[in-house]
Length: 434
Image 1: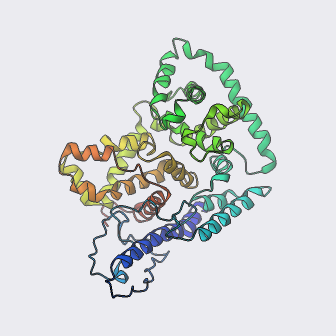
Image 2 (image 1 turned 90 degrees about the vertical axis):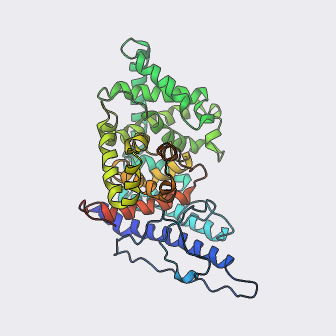
Image 3 (image 1 turned 30 degrees about the horizontal axis):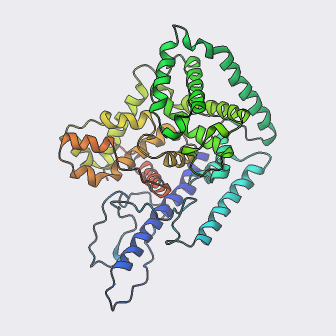
């Protein structure tokens, strides 16, 4: 199948490359510190490559790197886990960089090359969506992210000539919904829904963006219309967070500021804002079509996914699983939010956008692959989790993980580990242990 071809041939290579580059930086850092005053640094050992055909986990990226200073760099295994990832290190594929670790000219060439590949693919009369998914798995360059997300979500057709008419028709359809339904927000039947939306939006992040009146109005309309048109679930807290990444990505086309979190949306022309609003609504709707059982009565989709995560972690890292059990920490107490908000409350918005690049290129990315990302996310913090010996402190840590400084590389490593877990444990029987 096309999806399996994408996974085995492209994503595994990407995962190995991300992990391998991270290991090289760890080794280089050790070599810089280890030599004495009269020692010459040893040449950097060629890292041991994991063959793309061998899908077994050597070690999870998240385990603490415990080699002592006396050990030579050449003895280290490339998939040894790192207790804390370097936030300024270079992203292997298409991310931000630190010029001290890699020449800026090399990185800019790589970024330009990737951007050119996207542009060539998007410029054809019919975009090859399978190739677009392969290219997008390891991150989408900012200039082409809006059009790529619209294509990967299924909102726009692959045929270039049909896109303008599709956009015009869907935008017109959305504002017909506004005209037909939005005045009913104060009706007795719908006022509770609207009131809850109105309460929830100011609690979202980033505050500088959300609290702008124009943005608040847009989000209220999007969420209310979606709730009215999907009575099986209606509005549920958590859905509100799923609007932000689409809105931010689409508005970036029209805002020059790098920090879109604090951008002044009031300066964007009204007709542009209308189009961004409609596009955001339809793309969010496409996402929710695949996970709507997360938000129906009693949220059975989330209940099931939390149980699946618990079973998955029990096979991936039995020690962490038993530690949580021994301290009576239930997965529902911390992982409910991970499923309800797709980790948006756990990582910065810039990381969510990068994460969604991959989710939209993966088959069932927001549902099935998200499970493996959550498992990798949990195991990433195994050292800190195992050090906590108190129920309250352990739960508090899991509910407030220290990710505020995370960037593209942290997400790339997380995704690489999630992909390895998917291959090692997706179809494994329950007794299969690492």
